[in-house]
Image: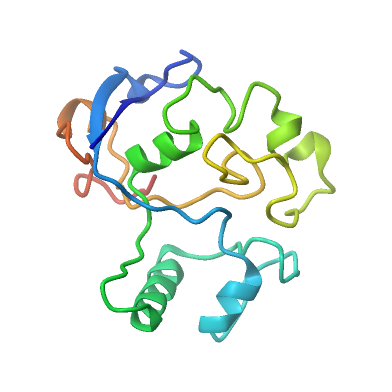
Length: 175
């Protein structure tokens, strides 16, 4: 089990990201980069992305698209291997380099680890071009928004359990 602080540890977020609280996570794996368009096209009939490029992240996907992709990748995977979206708690742990005190995923300098409006051409960038975070994960800040498995609920942090927390009811918006 992994112990991690979950929530707005920098006091720069919104009220529903509080209180900061300890959670326990079972071991998990995460891809080193967002899903690329080349990976997407191996399993899916259409590439919905606005900015084309095999090494760019797939974007403009709906949650239904993501679930269809996950279903297909699981069908193609070796027996015993299971892919899924991360929970919000897993994503926070991974983005913070394994629970480190980092405002941006990989450090304090967003330009070193993230593709964002001030250092991009207005579209997505090829994945893995900025520095990785402490777990070797790329693009955890910037480039595209990532889906989590959790449903957004303003009281989620006060309601979910301590072990492998994930909010699965009480709303329609996703984290």
